[in-house]
Image (tube, rainbow, N blue to C red; front, side, top):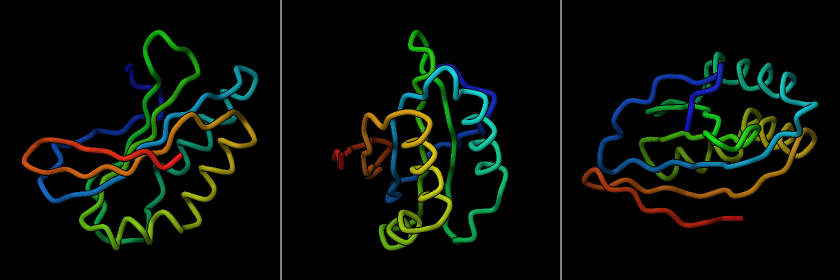
Length: 119
């Protein structure tokens, strides 16, 4: 995947972390509006302690297909984040400006990653 203009640095994720990953498509006519929304969300403090990483990438070879990924210190903090206004804003923007392809909950252990699809 290539980084879009809204990407942030993604550190190595330590064992025991959890996170979520959303893969989605944005309509070409809505690309600029989405990038502005994503930039605003990425540059704002999340307001919940425990954020390990947060990033947005555009998939190479599939223009306007993006991946939003966050990792957190514990499942309870992740659950709180999934119910937060910024995540609801992101999901709302995806719903209005494009289409969600997949939402996965991620669990990291010993450098390995496992996931389970949610949608």
